Length: 62
Image (cartoon, rainbow, N blue to C red; front, top):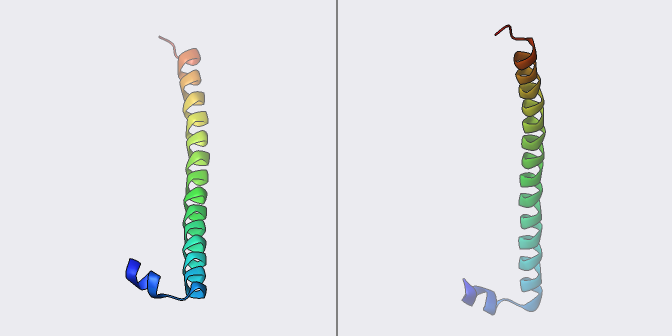
């Protein structure tokens, strides 16, 4: 693979580098969106779980 890149013209190298950088940014953007969604879900689960725990702790008859 390195030989193919070395044989390319400088403009070809720039184009390949630009495409690689764009692809990395797209993948990172997708990963960040997934992580944001997971964090949101985790916060909701923690709030609901905490509310259930408080309800059981303070309103149980035992």
